[in-house]
Amino acid sequence: MDPRVRTLHFPIIHEPRGNLSFIEGDVHIPFDIKRVYYLYDVPGGAMRGGHAHRDLQQVIIALSGSFDVVLDDGKSRDKVSLNRSYYGLYLPNMIWRELENFSSGAVCMVLASERYDEADYIREHADFLALANP
Image (cartoon, rainbow, N blue to C red; front, side, top):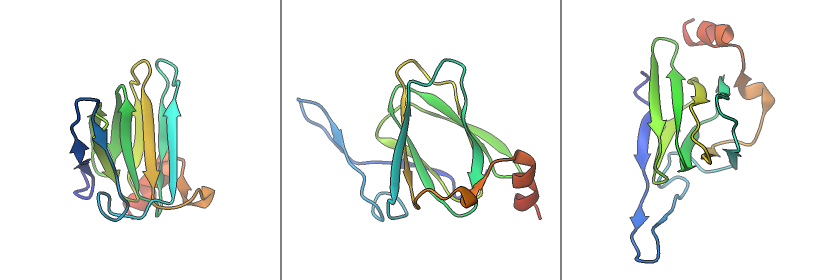
């Protein structure tokens, strides 16, 4: 797998009243956050993602529950399970991702380096493979 893909560990402040974690752009993640979105109420058996980005970088976090992220860098595939809100999966550009196996009540938050731009998406896997392996 592309060595740029990595798990990030966010700070945890332990409190008897409940723990707190935080994320600062350009500090805990390698980019300034320009967009935040989250997935929830994903039906059993549904898959999300199924695309890559030409330029955008992301950090994917399981805020609640769990899900798997299937990764493809054009040469190999890997699967990462996310189930803790203080871990994030950093995905640089040009990594195909599919999110699957959502637990009941799972919430997936995504921090993105850019605002939404449809032109940045690669939505066909064959197109991604051609670009990843010129």
